[in-house]
Image 1: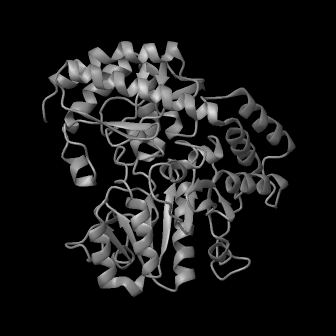
Image 2: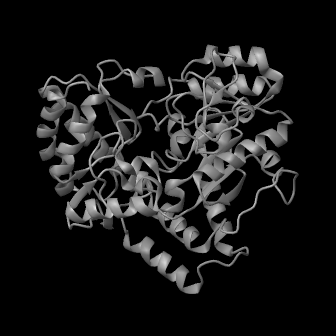
Length: 444
């Protein structure tokens, strides 16, 4: 660990907190962050030469495994032709067409295709920020509804905390967010349709949109109640507002058409107005997208009055990674992800149960997380009530055994198509000691 510790101290002198994204600082679990220098298949390697089975997968994009040769080759070939043009390229249209093709699903009402046009951007934060601006421009309204515990990037209006009541406008959730901007957002409890109805009854003609994670994955995994997303769509549309479904994490990871497509197999059909995508859609490169029905999307400049621009939007190297990843992520890949995830979920649960640790495995497709409570969580308050103090010792026991988990109990676990029997056995072998460490943990 010598070089990891030295690099962390060195980084603190030039980078706030020594990291460029807060969760990397290990603030939730303690200890020294690992500085990674290589990733291949199901494994990552730190600067001290320690190899770990990886269950972070770059927070989702490495759906095929790290450094998949076909993806790397596509990136190399694109880079050789030029890193950035600041102009339109043919590959941008190819990726937009592929996203449109993916976002279709069969239903009792026939084939649903809610994504008619796509705008490529560079980050998930940019995608959600643009979708919200677009919804406001299209509806001529200002207010936004989001849900407690859902994360849609770090733009000002989304860093908001709930007010004192269901229909109360939000307060700033971060220093640097002006109160008037936070007050354009209403923060409601998740999986509570009555709360949404109350907000619309009070502010209905002022609400431009509701933004919701297709399945919540940024407070641990908390899936929507059966039929929730469809019922939410009805409420929103009856009020003349738009529904933005955030699939930055779930999009093209839990199925060919994301969580939206997967959920139609077991529930009623629904048609959101806008989607946001990130992570998998860029194959690990800085790329994200928003898409939806043409009537709304055409409000974006240059056709419409809603401005959005980006020098690196549709960057050819990033687009090459996204195209290669999506083309390789076929039905066999999703079947593998589901099987690997199911096996791992069972092993984690068995290990914790053997030590008498209260827990629930929370899942949304192949995404899952461990909740240290016997009672499943359906909202953020229930997630916060778990025995979160058990996770840091569990995390470090796994890390010492060569398994890299997300460094926070409030994050999803990610498997890849490269997690073979050898990788899974290494994880499973590490679980008993980690479960003992969780069992022995005491509140601070």
